[in-house]
Image 1 (tube, rainbow, N blue to C red):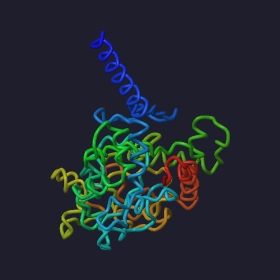
Image 2 (tube, rainbow, N blue to C red):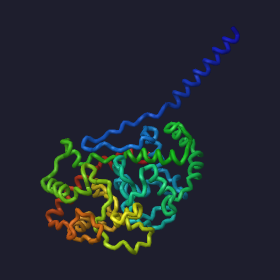
Image 3 (tube, rainbow, N blue to C red):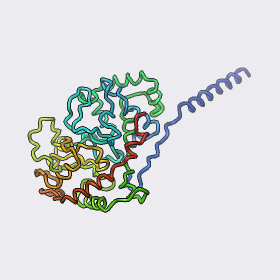
Image 4 (cartoon, one colour):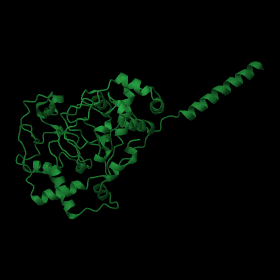
Length: 348
């Protein structure tokens, strides 16, 4: 009887402890990704399933200056929500060293559909691997990953959040997984154009805006494809003709720097047209300060080289003034005010 009584108490204590553990430390909740009605299906990394806990952790990390070596730079330093997660600079100097970078910081938008490499030259295969670049680059966040893990381990809230998100300790792999999960929630699909496309309220387009849409579909569709307004591919769009004297580690040779395919010389990743009115300056080096400059370039300022994209006429598209105004009018309909004010994407 004594043994049975002790066994009963022990079993009761174990079950109580398990019950408490389950109530305090539940399994991560799978995030139900809502695909906009006019969008294609996204591409997810099956080894990094999106969870509510992982996304919230990624959001905390995205805005945390602890991710930089000097504790002064966060991801948001170069990716500002009110600018559609761009930074408004041609070339940023917000990194730890203060050095002006060689490439323009791209806007972060609809990354769940980015299935063909990241960075302007496609040098990263996915969001998880991409994050290691800015985290460790000496002119960007310049963080030692071992020190970062130690630093976050000293913060009880992070220890708790990593356990909730991954059932695991803090590690550099889990840091980039959380960042990737949050960035995949940066979905912009509620512009006036989208509401027009889905026959929703406030979705009316003027005759000039409709004419601009028609022109974009006729002239720009080969690169700025579909509802994403990007093909996520790489093209030489005629902003340069000579790539032979590049002293910056091949950065201005574009995709060729990664692929070593001569056909890729001068080719850069197609940015989306979504929120284009908010993401100036433009191109991989931020050379164009206004959208009007971009339209002028495609209209008749093309620099011809052997790898110029075949869909771009060597003399440009020769837009007349009314067509330029129409294109501008349409591009403004792609601004998503809900995206740039969504509190779920803002600093925690």
